[in-house]
Image 1 (cartoon, rainbow over the protein chains, first blue to last red):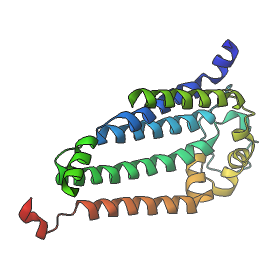
Image 2 (tube, rainbow over the protein chains, first blue to last red):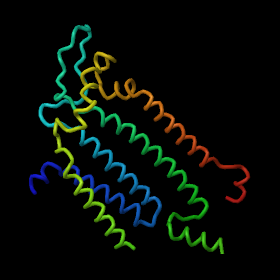
Image 3 (cartoon, rainbow over the protein chains, first blue to last red):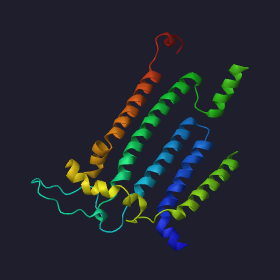
Image 4 (tube, rainbow over the protein chains, first blue to last red):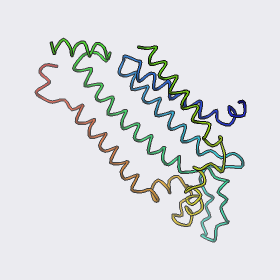
Length: 132
Length: 95
């Protein structure tokens, strides 16, 4: 059990973070708090991917030594560099999360202009009164 | 309602934690993510692209089309923000 905890605790931390975000998305009544919950959820996914790229041992960031003379490079040992692929994918994911957050905040501004509140239940009440 | 959501989240979280049993250990150099295609990028980035930073060579060269789509996402998001937040002249009367 302790062995499992020591080798997988990173995933467990991200699961907890993800569930905090999911709880905020489902249970909070304020729309801004829901949006922040979605951002926490996305951050958990990003941290999960970045933690996949980690290798233990003598590991460097994925930046190769550069020689200007262009002679033959020494053989590159893959185990000496972090896995660059999750970093790249998470760059894309960060961009997408910023884009969704921006559009969602713009929609929230419109909702606030129309209803004067960002509480979900009050908005639903106003909708019901208008519809009746 | 809150207790129902809390129960749902505890169930989902414990299922996810149960699922991590099959995940590779933290920092395992032989994990599937580090053995399939990423060794190619690490070994050939300097030969193919002469870019020391592997992340930028993968982002801009190997997966350049992906990044082009990403800029489309950014453009669409900025455009939608502009369309949503533009104040229309006829609406300014009742603001």
